[in-house]
Image 1: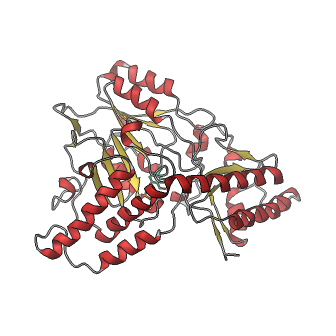
Image 2 (image 1 turned 120 degrees about the vertical axis):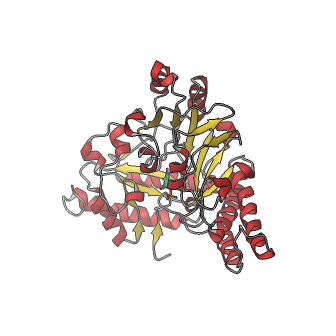
Length: 391
Ligand code: PLP
C-alpha cells in the first residue's frame, strides 16, 4: 500500500508527467521570449504552443488567452471596472458576485467595496438565479453595465453552478459574465462559448501544472481591458507586464493538453471512486451530512460533516493515519476561519465547524479509498466513545 493517501486535490494536484517533461525541456532554453534572436524565439514558441493548448481546453482561440502568475491574479485582472466591449467604453459601475466565491473573487478586484453586490445561494449551494435577475433589474444596476462573477464549481462543496442560465440573464441586462473555472477545468467540460461566459479564470496547478501560473481567457478579442493589471514591458499584449514564466507556462500547456485528452476517462474514474467513498462513509456513519449532495457536483469532491466532530482535529487524526484531507477551504489552510460557503448555505455553525473536504484525482486508487474508510471507521468510533475528534 502507498505510504500516504492524498485527498486534497482541490488545494493542489500532482504534477502530470507531460507537464514535468515540458518544464524540464523549457529549463534548457536560455532566451527571453521578448527577444528577437533565435534563443528568444524558441522561448516564445513554447509560450505560444502552450497558449494554444490552454485555449483549446476551454474552446478559446490562442489570442484570447492571457497568462498570469496564478488563478488569483487572473481573477484580479478580470474584476475591473475598465472592461470595454467594442465601442462601449464607459466604466462598469457595479460588480455582482455569488456569496460562495473564492476569496480572490470575494475581494472584488479593482471595484470599490460599495460597488459590490453579493448574490445568495440555496441550501444546496447553488446561486439563486431569481436573485441575480432581481439585482440586475434594479434601475441603478441596469444603468451600470454590470460585471457578474459566478464560479463554475465551488472549491469546498464541488457544487456546479447554473452558469449558462446566469449568462442569459446577465447578457439580457447588458452585463458581462466572468466565470472562475479553476476547480472545474479538467474535471468537467468547460467550453467558454457553450457556457456563455465572457471571461474565464484558470489555474495551472489544479490541472497538473505548476503552482504560480494561471490564465484569464476572453470569449473574444472584442473584450478589452483599458487598465492593465501590471504596467511595464508590455508582455501579454500589455495586460500583464513581466517576463513570462516560460517553464511554468510550457507545463501549463502540456497539462491542459493531457487534461483535455483524458477528461472523459478521468471524470469517470473519479466519479466511480467518489461514489465508493460516499457509500462507505454513509455505511459507517449514516448520520454524516454530505453538503450539496442533492445538486450536480464535480466528480471528485465530497464535503461532509458528522455532528459533534471538530474538523481541525479530524484532519490531524486523518493525517496520523496517512490520509491527507482538509477542513474548509484549503487555499487558506493555516488560518482556521469558518467557511463563508457553508454560512451562505445557512448551515449551522456547529455543523460548519465539523466540515471536512475530501477531494480526489486521476491517480487516486481504490486502495486509497479503503485507507480513507479505515481511518474514518477508527475516527468515528473514537467520536462515538466521546473522545478523539469531538468538538
Ligand atoms: N479560484 C478558485 C475557485 C480556487 O479554488 C482557487 C484556489 O484554490 C483559486 C481561484 C486561486 O488559484 P491560485 O491558487 O492559482 O491562485
